[in-house]
Image (cartoon, rainbow over all chains, first blue to last red; front, side):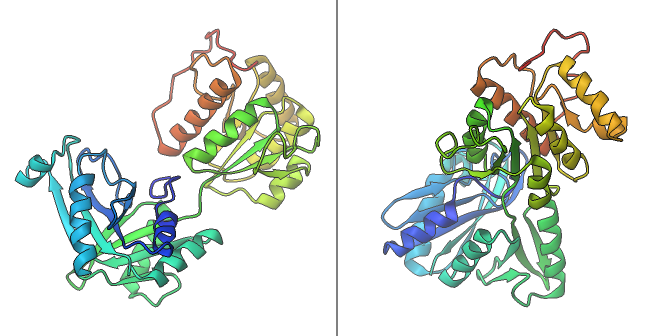
Length: 108
Length: 240
């Protein structure tokens, strides 16, 4: 249960891709403090704006989806840092507390 | 991630094989362990991540790699295709368990009562011999019938299952303990059985009892502090 999820994000991503969508995957790769989702938590997003799964308690999904759009456009993966001590995190509202790193990659 | 890696991940999962996805975070290069040839240090980290079921980042030649275990789902074996089982099975599936219901009484173990659920109408000892419960398996006995529950508990106690629970009041359990002792189990073995089953939430209805059982399974799996939650004098005999 630690890293698997009853919500089948990978399966959903594969279905979206098969339906012709452009898809990116975001994965929590490191956490510190009271991050709400453990390393391995995943979210899939499409260029058309669909989302499945999560990488936090809802605090940073919007920012991650924005970064994913970039990655879908350029094809280049990104390693995002979110932390309570980080100006950017305040901007995107990491109300959950803690720090985390999220890896964003295009499915291609 | 390439579509090829995704397809292989999904195929390994369908086959119930544990696999670790290794990602070099600088450029997104990926490989799957144990199928691909991954550098030795990564192979060790992958094996450890699968064993602990915990993702981690490791550094190889100054490069961070994300090691992401993909284990097959935890399993739940429910002995007794009873009303509480009907409530428990969909809840457990939603929490991520692969569920099998065992009941040789064909009036109970029907497709109509358990639509789309894996059913076994073998005797519980034979069913468990076939299922080979491991340390990622929980076993609950709900039939209230010693002819079914006892052989299931015999196999459960001989297995490394991480959770064993038995429905029944304190009185029922005391009689069960006596029978298990006759079968040769000692106190330490019998103490692995959670009985009366479930967290003490004063559950009354079948879904409430199912909730208390599932909550207890999750608590045990996660190592939650549950000690001293029940006093010997507690009037609770949930699900008697």
